[in-house]
Length: 442
Image (tube, rainbow, N blue to C red; front, top):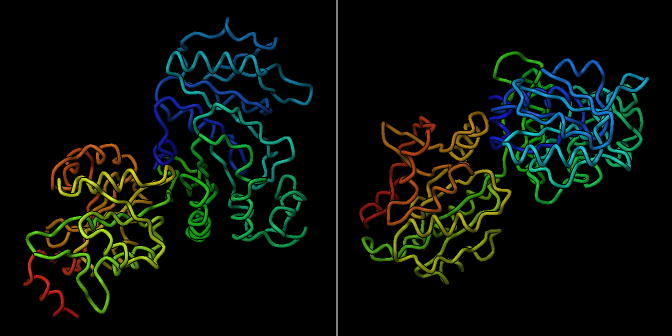
């Protein structure tokens, strides 16, 4: 995946980039990948040699004197800085200049990228008291960390501001930097999450993951970081071509559709029992064990009894007052109950307690490596449940009607079909005979 695809940025975002281990590479890579012209600047400093990454450099000599340089450029990437200092660093353009640059970008649909941190080219860092210098109006924030620092001793050669890194992570100077220490740094409010505006999308890029071993280490960190970020990317920006991001981890929720009256069956199917537990309880436990968070149970008919069946589990109840109108209303209810940070959701029907951890893990792994809008099992040429929907499909799901459920939007998105050999997933319980077939299976 390209960086811009994995981050799922809008066409003309306002992005600040902070951290270490390839921050400037990420800055100019995004500048090349975003559509249309792109303006780049800094609230700290860039090296004079880094201006060569832009197609045009504009030097602002007076604070706020930006207007005369603002015109729709023919160049792809334009860099705005102050004049070079004696130590060959390029400063920013001042608060007034930055505000005028923002106003112009918003009015002319131009992306604005801002380097808001410095790391002296090292793999890892901890922010100082005055860092990072993130404008409060950015739409997205990307935190970069270099995986080359893992396994090395905590020192000035590897980490910018190692004493701060030690204070935040609990490591001592000279101790080996571990996966856990990097996770602690990136999730700490005085570390990776420092000074991020509350409304901004939070993205972390674990860069320099250029081998299977390092990608595995980065994956362990990324899985932890979904508790604090909207997306955690694993990549290696020094690679050529478009496969610069190998995986994108997002918070994945589970939605169990358990609101229907099951008129064809004659009794509420979520309360039928299989292997000593109700269907809805069994599905909820599987979703929780697979790491889905939150797990939302949509109730309607027999709602109090369904809720009682999962009362001691770490699930949320979303009541659907319009359950009689069909399954689409329950899908909409589930979408409305999802937290803003949710990156994808797996939807379960309530008459398939035989769903396994394996299929959930496979769907999430497919989604991490493709960012497909829909991931669905395909068994013997037949579509099956459960289905994973990326956040990009949520708006479409919130508009469906009737009794057809999420399959109404399949034609609107590219579906990543997951070939699967477990035919048990083709069995749903519509009749007492179906229920007996389920009970007869081991």
